[in-house]
Image (tube, rainbow, N blue to C red; front, side, top):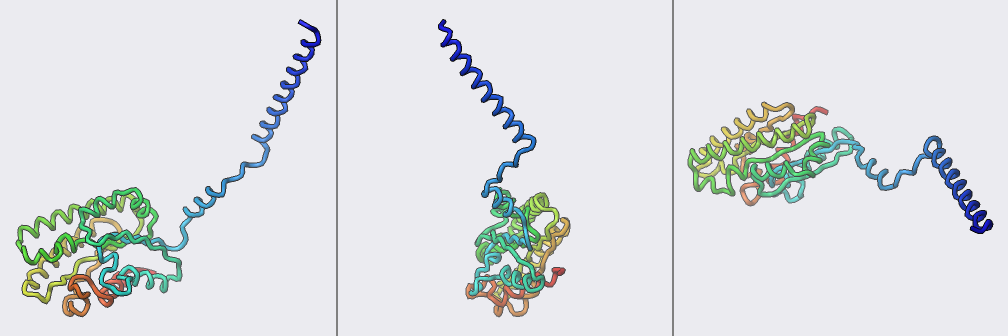
Length: 258
């Protein structure tokens, strides 16, 4: 082989060897003593979002959680939020997951959803309305009133709520949970007294179930509507109106410690 060719190959080899050594030295210097890699802006934003300031309140349940019947759109949840902000002077973040018409078997499915679990985990307080659609079935409970039917409906409801409370306590052992009891919207009707007995028993069993879990408080509302039910009902004669929701919100607020 020509000596010039050999000399050229040797020089090229030496050059690349030196280049590799310089690169290696630079890499080691960067690893042990160089500047840290810049954190992407997106990661910074995500970490900031994870930091929680103020109070996070999660509301789950049915149309009462949505505030159906209140022309202002607040419902008891909105009125309670205003009360908490005024009393605590803290920022309050609300996540309202209520679904109008929802029954306890449907809430049982909802509570297992990944995003719902995530919201529950970060909550400082959890509000629950449930049972009206199970018991009254859109008013059909009055037309098909049978004691054995009501007993079976109540049993299924309590089983579902037991599962729901277990899921809540598993996801979040510390948050206070307020479970809103039922009132009787039909107390002025012919079968009103019989339905009141059913609702009282339903509420008693709901209160006993709530007491079996730490930091789950049953909030009675039956007495608030009993004497003047029509004064506190919306035009559909089922949901509370603005005044009715305020009564519920004030009852919940009275149980809070500031």
